[in-house]
Length: 235
Image (cartoon, rainbow, N blue to C red; front, side, top):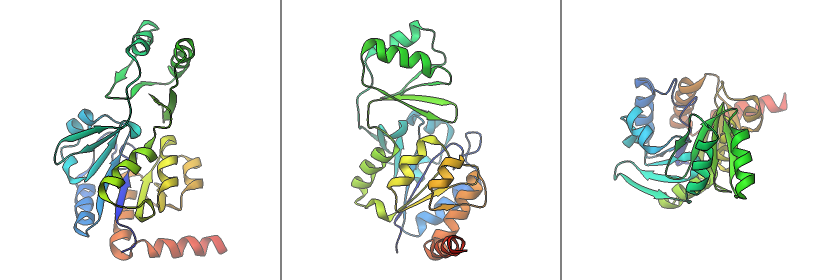
């Protein structure tokens, strides 16, 4: 077996309007039954995922907060991979009227165009923080924390190398995720910039595209997708 794990984004990929349909859950169960590991890689916070996705324990690992947290859903164990920005930063954002403002274990999140206020505060306080975008959402994290670094930590726990992983996503913050994987896949509704970098683009959108990918993994370990890509590339 060439690919030992699937790493999937949540919103816009696995989920539609924040929910995962029963067909997709069943497809994930079939993939798990093929002795492959399932890893969810998302910008969402763990508590939020538990609330909106009761089937979360189907995953072997959850990389949350855009790579800052690794969660074991069956054991309910959480590991932080970075420190949250200083309280002074969060208070300064509130003083500037940044709303909404979400504070996780590590991530501080808001929406566009609040990144301008956040950048002003970062400069004024002399902080080393990065701003990451996700289709209108804005995440503020310590430097060098992203979905790829979080996935790397999860894979180390599972003793799987990155080249044995298929990853799938749709947005700006999925570039690093796809780049580090053995096969990076963009769903049909993904940003054009992500599609351009992906090894494969699904025919279907969002969760239907994930199901398409899962069926190809189970059927022939993505070999048919490889042959189609090579044929189109030589045309």
